[in-house]
Figure 1 (spheres, rainbow, N blue to C red):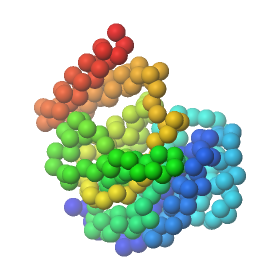
Figure 2 (cartoon, rainbow, N blue to C red):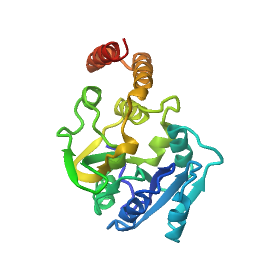
Figure 3 (cartoon, rainbow, N blue to C red):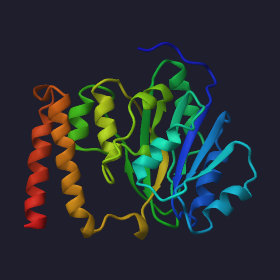
Length: 259
């Protein structure tokens, strides 16, 4: 295990925003209401044209650092730009339509103080009115996590807490538009041990604006092919037999969907 970190580290919370006014106040409120108080929000406005900037500035909170891009850029490029602004020892992510359990950061900071560098937990799916739906909790801890992620990726970025040094050395691949989170989790799982907290830490909102459409499908197939080609380049694939199942399912779905 890595060295013990400080007992009360500053946590940088990245909020990437593009025209996210609908649920934005609730998302920021869920940070302000955290029982853990040593945080900063790195709010990256990706050139929004709605009232997102007004909502953020209305909080008048010095712990919220507002940045606005001069142009609208792809999501994973915007995430990387936000990482560069973080001053914290750890980084967490919160999408502007999601919410955190009020103890999310406090729970994770305790595990961070024990030396864990990548910590995630469960999440619950909610609708636009916060009606509760599916709970998603991974049962396993660290063993064979790469293989298990290849078979089922259900780690939400909103539950992650990651050492800033790790993200500075392992940025999001900006060639992705859809699978950048998944790609990063796989790359990190080849190098680091993840700590799984078997508790609900995030409420992930599903609504009409964030559903994948049929028009995305060809992009999804292209990105999955790009992903697994990279796995063959950088990993000893015989150690990760699930990649072959991943490829088979990808190509079968691709054949059925776009033939």
